[in-house]
Length: 120
Image (cartoon, rainbow, N blue to C red; front, side, top):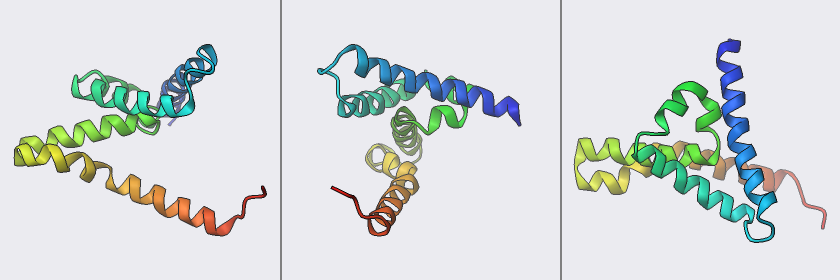
């Protein structure tokens, strides 16, 4: 069990450290929104080039849960769907591959918004 947890912690932690360093070393130019776009785009590009797959094999959830993992899932879903359905798969595959995660984020975001009221 620990042989899966430790690599996931190290890979996920390294991804978070990169994001934190980007924000800390480039203040105020690099905001959290920049990190979001950079990580999703970077994950998609690395996934399309086949460079993110080894990281997923080593780190498991530590590589698939962060934002870069979302970009990787989009790219992988699109590439898999292109192989099955052709060009139309490039448009629909990424959405199909990430639909459950997106739906869960919307559902739990809504649940938290009706459960708790912000104090402003």
